[in-house]
Length: 138
Image (cartoon, rainbow, N blue to C red; front, side, top):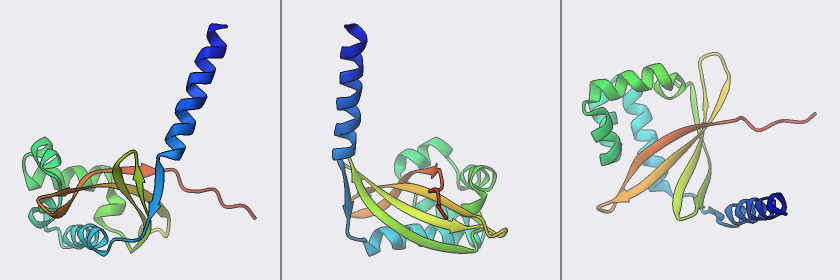
């Protein structure tokens, strides 16, 4: 009986998570914030790139140099993309996530979710998560 209740609770939680996701119209200001940060990375201008990060991210890395090293090592596709495309903007449980599709120098596509926060009327990036690429069927 306990496993059935646990299974029912898990199913309800997963269903409510799916219901909590809403696809929104594109927001040019969000896209511009992300693009401007990527443009700064392409110029190795870590100081400018750091300004697009939320206060929590800036506090975590403390300096533009630390932030730049983290991006170079952990997100090379963000540091040096060949192409940038914007996917869906989604509201998930009250948080905004912008999907960004980056093509790297080898031609591989990378899907990332940028969590966006509006702070004092300005969009800031508060996190980036690498997503699993969607499966393509023949």
